[in-house]
Length: 384
Ligand code: SF4
Image 1 (cartoon, protein in one colour):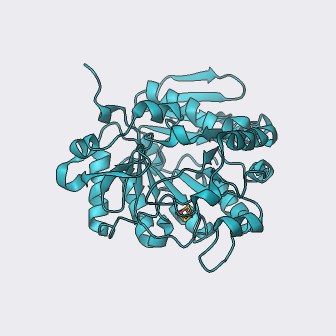
Image 2 (cartoon, rainbow, N blue to C red):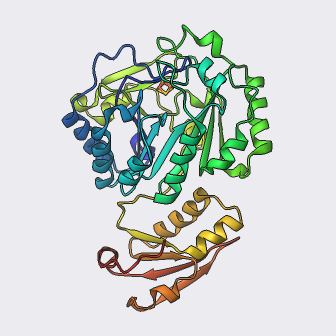
Image 3 (tube, protein in one colour):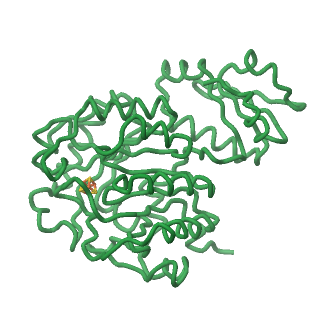
């Protein structure tokens, strides 16, 4: 039987809020036509609708600036995680700190920070600063990045290439932040959103390509780079606006569906132009696992972390390997990467275990267990 569109979807971008404390000139998430966002209760209901779609595994909370919602965003991330979704937040980073990351870290799988430049001048010119002119600092970005690494939140960086930053080499700064994924977008014109300023921002395909090549020459780990041209961006994101409607950008402006809560997921989805093929073509399908997923438990030992650093292997590569193992053992595996035996020998592991040597670096031990939650709650596995 042919798959329906819903069956192929894995990620939804939920734009919770239309406001932002920054004023980026290229911003295409102003939502000028949206009057107001739905109340908190309805946002939670939306998460339930999304989680009920069997093939959706990940939700990315976006804005405007989602952290403007304060505690409400944290509650939504927790709720989405409890519903079994992999959670992600995309932010300009200005309103969060180390403590925010620590407190959300048990529920947040990915933090994406939007960073376009390492220079004040470019950030000021492009509007990548607060509306009263407060600029982001490199020290703040570095603090957020190291908090992600410390508290186990996968770090992703988004960069938009515009006329303002097209000649910069940002890769040296990105190397310091050490993200698992660095997505480089070509600034996109969206009618009704950013056309007033877009002539100041627009870069040609050749300029964009030159920018990407420059970064690829300098970035320490090329596998983290994801290049996204205007063409790849159109129609390849499944997006919900602050009013609870799907919208798409395939026709130059936004096309909006009826409210999902009123007409249902499938009907609303049929009213917009979303291409799963384009989603896959832009490398949108990647999995970092889910902190609330009880079907498999990963433990990374210190030994493993050391080997990973020595051999320059990204978290994304590791997670891809682990996810594939988890799938194949259908919910009864405790997966330990590194040398587990010394620290795990006090745990009674039911019967057989298996050791797999994987290419490049990972010694993976897969223990078959009946009850992973029990192991976790007994706090017997504290290796990181
Ligand atoms: S930080 Fe993001 S949402 Fe805010 S103005 Fe800039 S691009 Fe738009």
